[in-house]
Amino acid sequence: MNKKTLKDLNVKGKRVLVRCDFNVPFDENNNITDDTRITSSLPTITYLLNSGASLILMSHLGRPKGEANPKYSLLPVSKRLSELLDKEVIFSDCDIVVDENVKKSAQSLMPGDVMLLQNTRYRKEEEKNGEDFAKDLASLGEIYVNDAFGTAHRAHASNAGICKHLPSAVGFLVEKEIEVMGNALQNPKRPLTAILGGAKVSDKIAVIENLLNIADNILIGGGMTYTFLKAMGYSIGTSLLEEEKQDLAKSLIEKAKNKNVSLILPVDTVVAKEFKNDTEFFVTDADKMPEGFMGLDIGDKTIELFKEVIKKSSTIIWNGPLGVFEMDNFAKGTNAIAQSIAENTNAVSIIGGGDSAAAVEKIGLGDKITHISTGGGASLEFLEGKILPGIDAVDDK
Ligand code: AMP
View 1: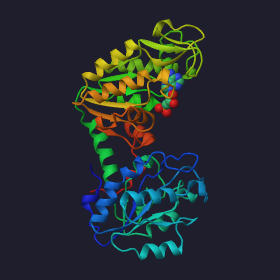
View 2: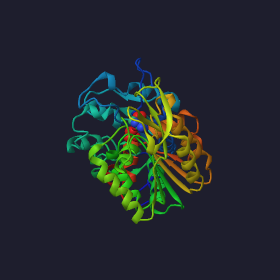
View 3: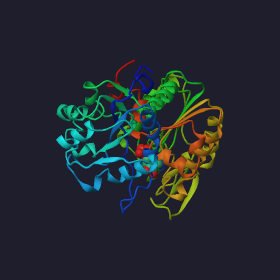
View 4: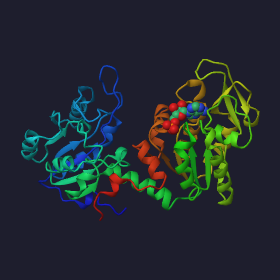
């Protein structure tokens, strides 16, 4: 890792601005339903506090589209953080995030104090990486730390722009993300198996292309399966199809052969009459899908086939559910694969954020996985081999 980390900083007596990812989900009564993103930021926060810094934390929350909106206020996050830290968190409830009062409050912070700014996306310039907003934010502190992996694939004022104005480093969370995923891509223990699911081929093309240069095995599941099967000349009934991506699917299969990568498609599939949990469904071989039915999960033979490959792998990267796991009748494949990854405790296992992470947590296997990424989109772009602008902007060692 060539980026500066917390250990490269001397923060004693300094005001440190920390970009966190506090973009947590809420229920209809405005209660936080999952505070993982807040708890994940605690190692960085407590390390900086114990090192004698005062902290100005910032984050986005949802999509307030560049204006103040109480629905997206970070106040509930501030309260939860205060409970977790067992100390006061000064919440700066400013509609434009930074004004003269906020600047004064920041100036008066003492070592050990924690202040949380209002949602950075209350300002239009945030997502445009606006120079004035980046300067406003930077004026509050003396050092900048980026610990928000979830937004690292976007160049925004609070992660990219701000780095121009302050010495910077990555926090523990971002450091772990890029170290574990970077190692898996650059220097993996082999065999390296990538399991790719999710809805669409179009969202995963770049990942498949990149992993074709790196992985030993690529296991395909989820909605994109059927575009591949159709491209191979099979009938797929009413399954999800990206008509115009069939040629591409064919070329990916061809490339895999040429590169000696074993690209494995489902050999059987659960088909359903309708896209809902309570409907007629059964398992059929992938080349015998009946008319009027849609594929919503991988079948039992495929589960066994995938499990055999997973068992023999030393590095496993998983991104995207293998079926419509939100519906119990079509969650079997996703759960079985999650279980099998968790059982291979000798392997380095990495799960991209979003749905696959939710699937492992739901069945209580999160702690058996080497690394669950905190950023769905960001981890996907990382696996695509792209440079993440939010990390690129941070000072090199
Ligand atoms: P993604 O965001 O691309 O990872 O896709 C996740 C979504 O893919 C989930 O909501 C799944 O329900 C959906 N999905 C998985 N398998 C299928 C399938 N066979 N047909 C339709 N949608 C699927």
